[in-house]
Structures are given as C-alpha cells and as structure tokens.
Length: 108
Image (cartoon, rainbow, N blue to C red):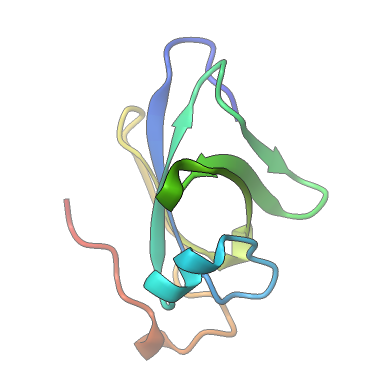
C-alpha cells in the first residue's frame, strides 16, 4: 500500500484482542476492546499488506517513541478510513467478538 505522491493518513480501527493481532502490550492494556491507529502512507513510509497472511503490517511509534512492527489481520479490522480519497469502509464486527464488547468509532 504505497502512494506515488506525498504521504497522507489512513485510519484503521481494530480489535486488539482478536487472534493474530500483534501490537505492543500497552495498546492492549489501554484499548482492550477497540483501537484506532493512524498510518502515514507514502513512498518513505513502512506500511505493507501481507496478502499471504491476510494482514496489514506496519512500523509505527507508540508511547516512548520506540518503533514497533504491528500486524493486524483483516478480520480484526472494524473500520478503514482514508479521508484524502474519501473512502470509509465499515467492516462490522469480527466473528469471535460479541457486539457489546466493541466501542464504535466516533463520528467525525
């Protein structure tokens, strides 16, 4: 997932406790039911989609400023938003998560 022009942000909301999600423990502790990350997409950014494993992999910086490589399976995602391209995809709830356990994305 790379852009040939300048970089821009995409937002991904996901369930941190979903099987296969790899994120730092601080994300699971602070956002156990739903988390939204902002990914800068562009030529110099480290964001990739691993189609073999049905997941998005990205290098991001959380608390403390240390880079972390995260993996979010597509099935763990609940919302994908790219404002620059005017795209919002509501993916619903992952199959193993009960509807009452997920905090919905706030309206923007």
